[in-house]
Length: 215
Ligand code: ADP
Ligand code: 5GP
Image 1 (cartoon, helix red, strand yellow):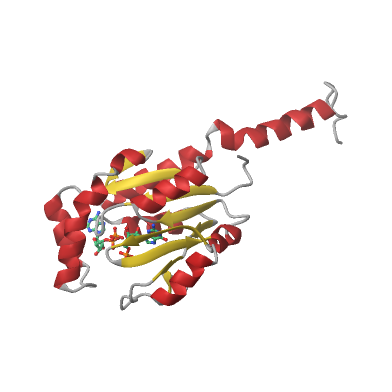
Image 2 (spheres, rainbow, N blue to C red):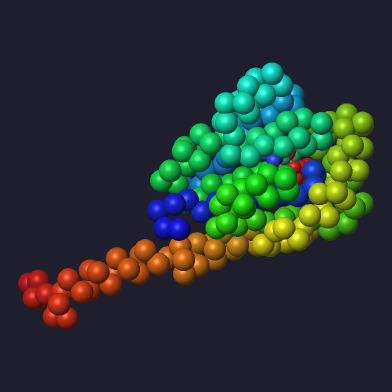
C-alpha cells in the first residue's frame, strides 16, 4: 500500500437508499476523486448518459468481456449484469481515490483482491422511507420498484461485510459522514507512511545539521 495508490472506496446500499446521491456529493466536495464507471446490460434511465453513469452494453457484449477477462468483478443484480472493468483501475492512476458504486457481491470480490479497499454500507432510516424513495425517483416502473424493494432485505443482510455502516436520514449529515470516512481513511498509518518515510530521508540528508540560513 502506498500513498500514491488511489484509495478504493466501495459504496453499497439497497436500491433507493441514496448511494448515488451521496457519492455525487462526495465527488463534488472532495477534489481529484474518480467515479468507477461500470458496464451494465440494463437500459439507461432518462437522465443517464452512456460513458458517464454506466457503459451500457448488450448481454452478448458483456459476456464477451467476461470471456476476455476484462472485469475486476461482475455480478447479476436485479436481473441485469453489472461489472467493473480493469480499465477503470488504470484510469484512476494519479487520482486521490476511486469510488465504486457496486452491490455486496462486487464488494466481496474487490475486498478479496484488494484488502485495503474501504467498504461503506448505506442504510435507509426505515423500510417505509426506502419504499417512498424508490417510488419518488420515478425512474422505474411498478414491477421494477417491487423487485428492488424485495431485494433490499437480501442486500441489507450482507451489511456485515462492510467496514462502515451509515444511515442516510438527514442528507447533509450522511454526506458529512461519508466525506469524514474518506478523509479519515486517507490518514491511516499504512497510507501515510510513505510521506513520513520521505521526511525521515530528507531529514537524514541534513546529517543532523541544519543547512545554513538563507539571507
Ligand atoms: P440509490 O443510488 O441508492 O438507488 P438514489 O441516490 O437514487 O439511491 O436516491 C433515491 C431517491 O431518494 C432519489 O430521488 C434521491 O433524491 C432521494 N434521496 C436520497 N437521499 C435522501 C435523503 N437523505 N433524504 C431524502 N431523499 C433522499
Ligand atoms: P442501478 O441499476 O440502480 O444503477 O444499480 C443496481 C445495483 O447494481 C446497485 O446495487 C449498484 O450498486 C449495483 N452495481 C452497479 N454497478 C455495479 C458493478 O459494476 N458491479 C456490481 N457488482 N454491482 C454494480
